[in-house]
Each structure stands twice: as C-alpha cells, then as structure tokens.
Length: 334
Ligand code: TYM
Image 1 (spheres, rainbow, N blue to C red):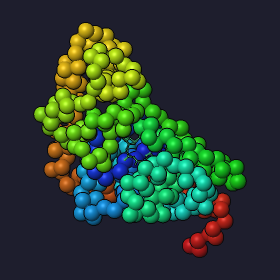
Image 2 (image 1 turned 90 degrees about the vertical axis):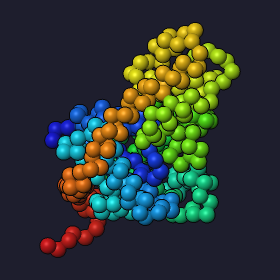
Image 3 (image 1 turned 180 degrees about the horizontal axis):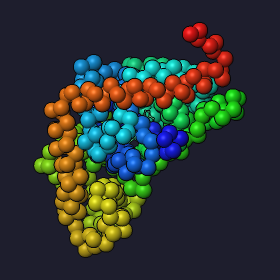
Image 4 (image 1 turned 180 degrees about the vertical axis):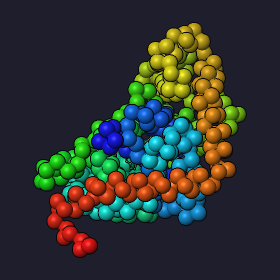
C-alpha cells in the first residue's frame, strides 16, 4: 500500500508504433484504474534492447510513448510515469530474481519462442531472461494489480511463481500480484489475419491501426479488414474477422458484443466496418490532439521525467533494501 491505496504497475515497450491493440488491451484500462490505485506506468526501454534498436529512434519513441500515456488521460502529477532505465533498481532486482528462476521455466515462455524464431540471428541472453526483468518491474513496487493484454498472462504467472518461491524462503517480502485483463479488447487481432494478434512489429501496415493514424487511414484499414463469406454479423469463433471487428467496436463504444450483434441484425459487413472505423476515430482523435499539444511543451515533459524518476527510485529502493538484507548482501558502511 502507498498512501492507503493499493499499488498498480504496468509498462509498454517503445518499439514500433503503438497499435489499437496496445490501447484497447492495456492503456485504456490504465486510465480507468488510475484514480483507484497508486500507479506506476513505465516506458520499459530496458526491455526494448532485447531486440536490436536504432538508438536515435528508441530515444524518440520512448519520449513519444510517455506523452501518449499522458495524452490518453493519465495525470503525470498523480501517477508515476517514468523510464525504466532511469531507475537502477530494475536491473538490480532482475539480477537477484535471475537466481530464483529456472531455465526450464524460461524455456516454456511462448513469447521467447516467438521472438527467437523472428530474430534467429540475435537470440541473446536478455531475450531469454526478459520475463525475469518483467517480474522485477512488478515486484519492485509491491504491485497488487497489473493491467495487461492476454499475451502477457504467461509472464504474469511466472512473476507470481518467482515471488512465491522467494517468499517461501525469506518470509513475506513481495506482494503477489494479480493480472487485470479487461472484459473486451484483451486480445485485438490483426485486421489482415484474424488468427494473429495485432502487433507493432507486423510488416503489413494494413494489419494494424496505429494510434497516430489519421481518420482516412483508419477508415481505409477498417474497410479492408478481412472478414468471411457468411454475410451475417455474429459474435462467434467461426467468424474470427467479424468477431474481432465487434470486439474493437465494443471496446471503443462501450456497448457489449451482444448489443453490437443486435444493432447489426440484418445489416452487412460494409456497415459494420464503417461503424468500427468511426468509433476508432472518435477514440483516437482526442488522444492525437492532446499528444500534439504536449509535444510543444518540452520543459513540462522534462520536469515530469525527472520528478517521476525520483519518485520511482524512492519506492523501488524501499523494496530493494529489504531484499538485499534478506538475501545476505553485506550492509553498506555509511
Ligand atoms: P507490449 O509493449 O508488447 O504491449 C503493451 C501492452 O499492450 C498489450 N497488447 C495487446 N492487448 C490486446 N490486443 C493486442 N493485440 C495487444 N498487443 C499488445 C500487452 O498485453 C501489454 O499489456 N512485456 C511487456 C511490457 C512490460 C510489462 C512489464 C507489462 C515490461 N514489464 C511489467 C506489465 C508489467 C510488453 O512487451 O508489452
């Protein structure tokens, strides 16, 4: 607990352009939860370098991502928005937790398998131990809740296992975190291949809606979305393309999938796609406008970055000191 509130931690990588999947699966829930919890929202730049990055691009995208958090509606004066690399505790705790994680556990991580297949020329040790760094992120702040999309659930389970293992040896050191997965939008699929998740790294630009896409582009991508030849708007697994469109519309409009199905009873896919496109535009336009405003205020963003790094460092050090004592590191002489 911090200030009598439960603690929330989550993060995103600034690799590639953020997609509607990132927004509906995570960011949107972050905004909803931010009054109820004491929140830490990190731009996880240390995770990003597990895949080779162009330095200037990573720096630029990291800053943009931080501004997107604010533009989405998270107040940076009340919530801790910061760069992971500005807080040394992440790396320190990750090392310690590496010594409490088994190779076999990491070998089972599906994201590692996917990324290793994608980057066969650079299967580095960081890519392999990535989930341990993620566990450190969460446990460092004693987070109670972690809002994520479904693709991160396996990492969350591992985090809980590591925390429980550590607590069993040393007593109640870590809070065991719970995942928070939204009812709709937790897994937004590619518009071009609804069997794959919508991803920042998809090579086909029509497969993803990017948060910074203009209205015409959004409408065009929705119109081109792959559906099927059934011709009826129903929410079921046999029609994955249509189901995904209903999910997007539902998450953007606040209507339930059942309500959407009723709304489109007797109507065709063309009309559904128009409605989906319009609902996405209405959600993203205010975010884009606010982002453009923020980009003009360099001094303000700089101050947020500095103040919040200090705040995150302060709270992370509390956990870290406790962990270091428990495992037997010698005390520093002051
Ligand atoms: P990342 O950057 O890949 O994605 C950020 C968030 O967006 C969610 N997401 C999706 N949700 C629904 N549909 C999709 N198509 C979709 N694509 C992505 C992800 O589930 C995630 O919540 N390892 C994490 C970042 C991370 C983290 C953490 C998260 C590092 N440390 C600690 C939580 C707690 C990642 O790469 O997310």
